[in-house]
Length: 447
Image (cartoon, rainbow, N blue to C red; front, side, top):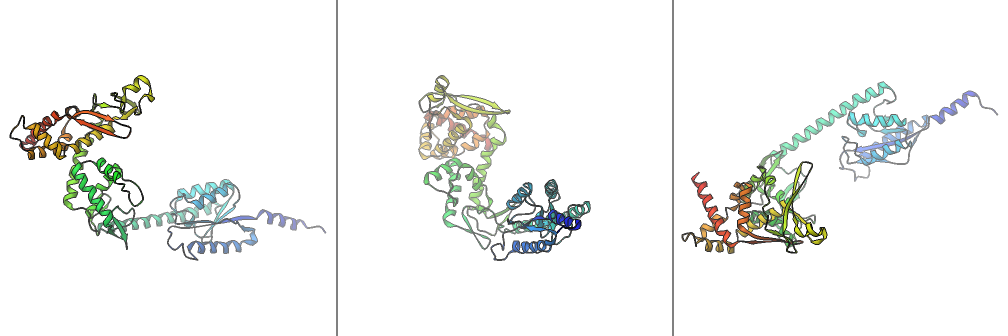
């Protein structure tokens, strides 16, 4: 029995109209996704019903699911969307079905990228609540109009959220994010964690004593202390803690500080003292003196094998890098010494940090007082202590050449080990330093 031409044409058209459909769903937040029937399920159900209504047109659902729960429509960096685009590129998807266009994206630029992929692979896009097609210029115009409103809506929502966030911060409210060490969060409020808060107070007090974040970090590490994430606190993290105004009972938004609802961990007096010291320490860096500094430890620094280390430098991409290199390595090669070279800035900073600590120790204060009495019998131990405690202020005011002179005056020898650093001082240099500090203090008072 033969078939008519009309029947054969209808059969060919039915074969051509078979369209593999992929349902894409998205929800910006993760709230409610744990429910048995959530927003993603509701979107998918509506899309499945629409595909079923097009069964006569040859529409078939693909097996894979493309669900992005907790992802914003303002970006294309979504795992399920990436899988969908990969399947379109592979030619296994012909129609993308969504509940609303803003489920796919909220940006005209992003949509233009998606349409480029669709058109290149012959795929189409359908929104079950907004009837249009991307196959015609009028359909694309309609889409662009809808996307403009979607993008506008997203920007308005973003502005409202930012305004609400700013208003809440001005009231001192905690608005989420990283929870600072020393606090816990309960009912969206910061509450003091006494065990951690004690460590935070110790960091502030210890820095106020030593003026060195590196020393604080080393002592914390030696005690085995780690934060709630199991991480040791290095010098950089110590500085972040010392500069976090939350510990002073404040809430900060875009550089502006407001009284916080939470309780402060450190007193205002301790906070002000620490930040005065931080400001003094930052002054020479701000003036750019470090980059111009001569080799502070020239002739003073030695490697673990006892050989001298000489200053050298290299320049890469118009940036200067300074080092101290072992003389033994220069003569016999890299393997001649376990420490072939050290960064000049790092080892110099470590020596200055040790000087700050040593000059505040009772033993050094007494030794300096005894040496100073030989030239100034009227000097008292209190005078010497006060002068040595002003070392940081004097150091910040010195030019690089003067800083080098002070180091040469105080330091007899610096020994660099594989994992250690030892500084030996000139006992006679301490008395000279006291005289300079006392003179500098008199000059400041006179000014």
